[in-house]
Figure 1: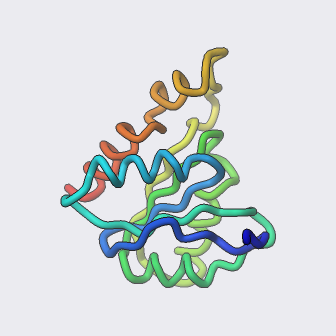
Figure 2: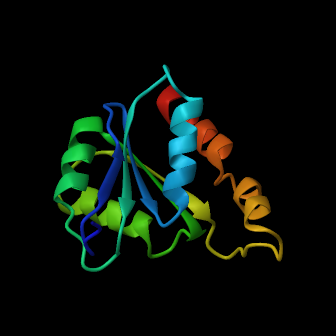
Length: 136
């Protein structure tokens, strides 16, 4: 049963923490399948922005040292802001990358699948971004 404020852990790993808002968790799981054997990751789906129990997220970020947020809307004020605050306020020293619709741009009047591909928010785009993060 989903409880508001409790992130749902959809996968467990050691290399990266992925925090998703909404249906982006399905695309992150697809990316994980595409990267099988290259890395493992903790993938979390946020059930709400507020309230939010960040205990599990903080423990995961502390473990992996790297966090990627994925959301199908603006990168302003969502999961990315939560992750940035969590890293800063708890002195986690983790690298943070945000994936979403860049501030100041808008989705196209097109099917969701087009917009996800256009902004790199589909499984392949997320997998490519994870590959870039792991290479650095």
